[in-house]
Length: 138
Image (tube, rainbow, N blue to C red; front, side):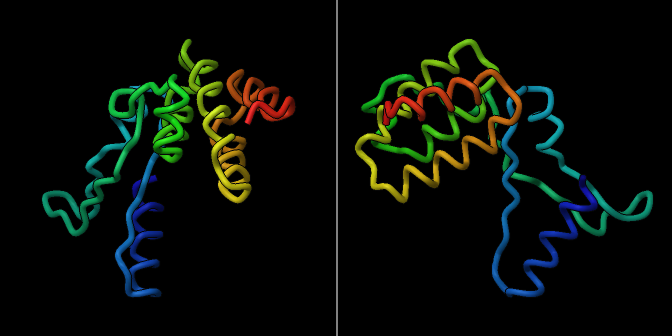
């Protein structure tokens, strides 16, 4: 991954001449610890490039189960659901987020719903999310 990630970031910087940031979202502590790097590229004894991704994982993203808190920051609430998707609190997090989406515009609902659909992967949390969205909890 480090070589691919470095290539993607370098390509974006070279092509668009703008800063690029690698955000890695993890559902388990071990993967989050690994993904934080740093990843050093270059010959032995010499670092040509060092990659330090921004990692969101269970240890640095809060569990948000209060719909009012979720409504104040839908992005953070979505990352809470993604990073804690395998946690026992996942259903409560998803319920709070679904409720909070009731205060959001339709574009935001579609955006966050799709992000969760993809980000929760093949987990029980995704099934919970689909059920919540199908009954119109939001």
